[in-house]
Amino acid sequence: MALKKTFHDDDRDVTYTDAYWRLVHFSYSWERQEADLLFSAFSSEVAAAAGRTPIASKSFRLTGDEFLQVDALLTAGFKAQVYEFAKQQPDFADATDV
Image 1: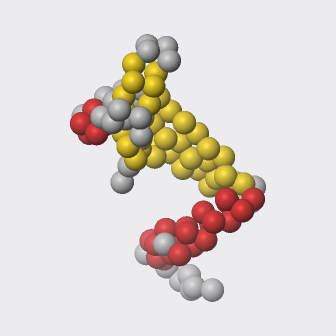
Image 2 (image 1 turned 45 degrees about the vertical axis):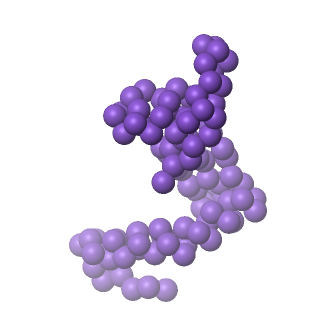
């Protein structure tokens, strides 16, 4: 999944009407209660699929209620899958859910 959003490159004075924004990095720290998101924009979906260089990037830091919302989503889906994966590894073979 990605987002399409018009992007105007001020340096080149070019407007990309179908700029394709993809989440390219997600950093999460339960200890610090923050998460960082990094999106890269490509000139089009075709350019992204071809591995072309991004035309822009945008980052967001989530803290407070925003972090708690992301944490709840992770717990409901991604975290559960990660814990199941860990239980399949030799170091966690005897782990139990709590």
